Length: 324
Image (cartoon, rainbow, N blue to C red; front, side):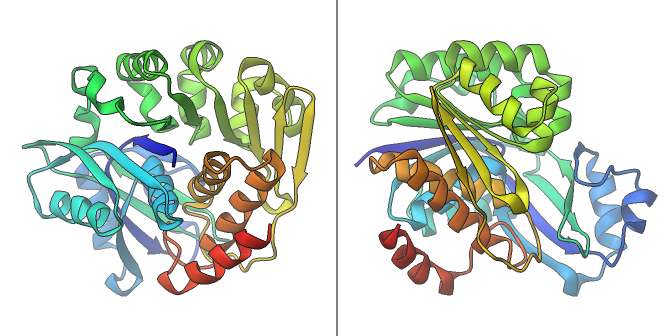
């Protein structure tokens, strides 16, 4: 069985439902974005929201994807950095509970925290204190991390650390791994555009992007962006929200329809899509089937609060995958 290694920010997610956009405006958080903030701002947000509307889970884009892959029975591991604190212990414990091999580095800095503010339309806006997560560096990336793995899945939030990403993708390719990159946030793409374009062209095999990220990368709408991505890498995926997704490899293009879902919280939809798609690849499925599995997982995560699919849904999901 193929094995996937995730590389990302190890963040504890605090999911917070809010009644309108007022809190976003108060704290100057652009709706739908991911903003790096001081810990004091996260604390201020928590102080102004009801505890009953807060759900705490392990998070971070790549960690969510790896969690989904593990729940589908795949062999996985995750590389990240957390603090010597209760939240760090919580994060590592959650990985172990799901059968994910933890490849963690620890530091005296507090574990990273992401406050996800969810409006009634299901849109989420992240205020992120990176804390220990941002201390993951190129010096932590050693050849031994990649031994026995077939795919390296990286979250786009890390591309702000150019040296870390460059070291990781070079070492992954040297050890024969496919490299998968989820662009993760349109503002991160805009701020690191030239670097991301070079990395994608030189090292990346699979790119995941939503419409905003695709537009930030290419300046074009979804279908045109898909073609541009596919000129740079082997497999390109543009997720188009309620319309589904587009997948392209060479001259093959697939349009995958979304499944009917009640949207409660879109957090983790892209991460779980990536998990389903990579699962299909790991099992030698066609790209169309990979896209359908990604869509199935994304459709199941948006119906609840947080970036994890509830325990009771997995048996049915696996049954549905077997029918695809």
